[in-house]
Figure 1 (spheres, rainbow, N blue to C red):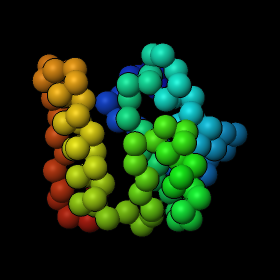
Figure 2: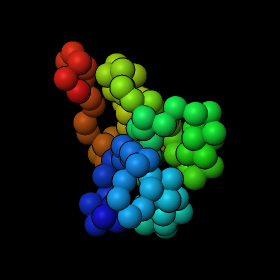
Figure 3: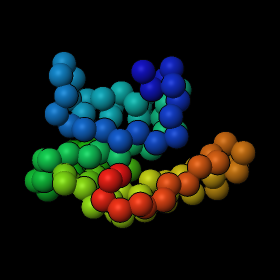
Length: 103
């Protein structure tokens, strides 16, 4: 799906049907077409080992649910800024803004 859509950033849960988020992250980050897309794992799994596993699979960040909206927005905007710097302003035009807890 990521190779069809080519999103700017992927927010990935760990617990999903048929394939877990670690496996899906590995597929995205090791695919030539999608390897440039930053993946942030967003999960209720809060063990240190889960965070390390996410990093090993190529995730750029790991946030534990319930998510602090400001942290999420700051992380995504930071990743978007990195993409802008790397690929140019024409590619990434959006920036997220925090509007309270309804993220």
